[in-house]
Image 1 (cartoon, rainbow, N blue to C red):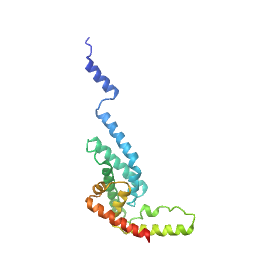
Image 2: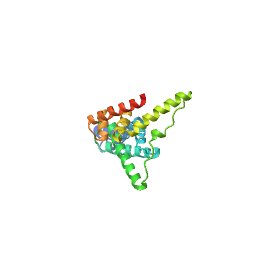
Image 3: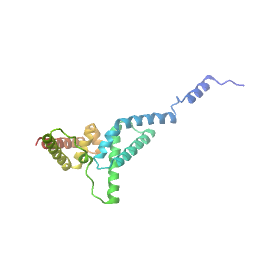
Image 4: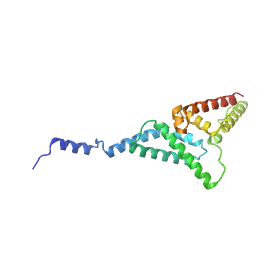
Length: 194
């Protein structure tokens, strides 16, 4: 009877312990990374998607599809650079696809944005509440009057994306992002001051 050499025994122990860097271990590491990113970015992605006038369940479905795409992307060994921007870009494209599908199938006008439907916190003083409501109405009117590209830039910036990431998500130049945000913020500030 021949005794196994120490290198064979060591390889067997490594395989049994799960410390191998094989496909199963890689899959677990990728899964962990995706779960961590999901925990960090789910709420931000949801807020961004609600700006597309999507229902919450539809937005959650898109988020699920987005993170599934991320899992597949990482398992294939693709780039890990700028994953936050990559996630917003995938979610953005899926939301546009969902809107086109919904419009084509139902041919109904788009609903109001989620921001317009949100409840306003009550203020103790009716005069203050009236002033707040007027300001919010003006700001919302300006926000709705902005070109869609400018609104998307604002939403992404509000979610903490950098200008370069916004440019990647919306497929526009860095200079255009800067101009869109600058002009939009000036218009909103004017509406808030009135």
